[in-house]
Image 1 (cartoon, rainbow, N blue to C red):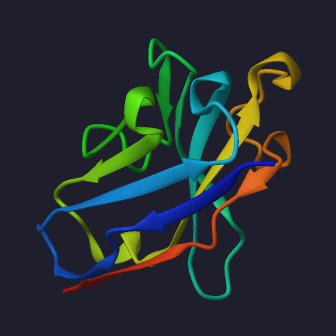
Image 2 (cartoon, rainbow, N blue to C red):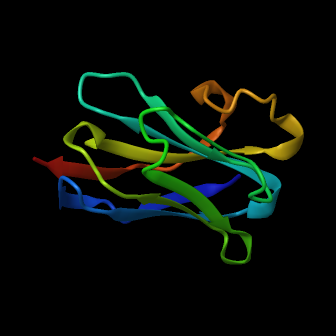
Length: 127
């Protein structure tokens, strides 16, 4: 199994920045594709960003493209989500999730693609 722990959330004013971290343990992190999702109150969990095992491929939701950057450091077993120019509508609980490479079907924006999830970290953006 893989254990994922997110950190870095908090309260920030609109236009500010935060960097979320996702620390992985239990398995070889470099064998797992990683995604970030978020869930706002009363809404479904939605895709934010994806990064492949090596970091060579990344994808973003249109709502965050140009403002958020996903990255990973496999040597540190950690993934990141740099969030700049935050907006009140970015307020949500942010989750990282992973899927082992051989079992990945390519649906990077589908939460059912991922079989390990962190507990989430709250991001609140004030206007």
